[in-house]
Amino acid sequence: MERIRITYADHNTEIEHQLPLDAQLLEKVSLEDSPHEWWLVALERSLSHVGTEFPYALVASRWEGYPLSGPRPTSVFLLLNSSRTLPSPPRVSGFPHVAWCSVKRVGA
Image (cartoon, rainbow, N blue to C red):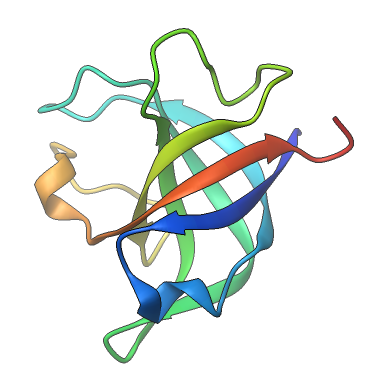
């Protein structure tokens, strides 16, 4: 599976000191209230947010034409998830949106 590096860009200084970190792309997922291409990722270490540890995240490119698996770094939305399982139906509003980040493929 492909690995990415998540680097802080903007929006939440609580998260800034916990980044960068690597993550493994697990699967492409659809969120009911979003047109973006979302990926569920397993973080190399959990991110702490308001006293809760999150070992998983959802990331989606903020820019059309800049996919996560592409050769260029891209700006992403970072949502946190406490498990590999998503609620049904999954919605953006069901996850903490904690930051805008930059993502690049590890080794790219």
